[in-house]
Amino acid sequence: MVVANNKLKAVTVMLRASQAVQEVLKKNIALHGLNQTEFAVLELLYHKGDQPIQIIGKKILISSGSITYVVDKLEQKNFAIRKACPTDRRVTFAAITSQGKTFMDEHFPKHEAKIEEIFEQLSEDEINDTIELLKRIGHHAAKL
Image (tube, rainbow, N blue to C red; front, top):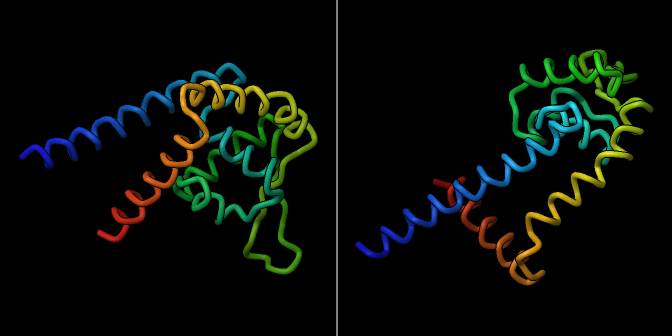
């Protein structure tokens, strides 16, 4: 039973660590007037450019209905706009505005610094090991 208990403990530790990290990032993002989902969409547009709205949900793991709401909120804040696809009328893109880019230019470095702070107790090798182990767990779980 020791092996099963260690695996259960590993799941509990992994989930608690994830919750703690999310809470820290949520509080940090809230200081800038956005929620985590709004920030995630804005970050995607900031780093990857215009994105089909239908694809955004898959990239940041939220439902398509939520994406519409989030893009609406970002439009209200003048951080994003919708743009029609020139080649396919069925597709609408979300694009970052200049105001959204300015916001991210100022606030994304603070977000990165908070992430650095979260991982400051680990060496680069430990971070890389963590990434590899979590990928293996996630890929195997996805197959089950």
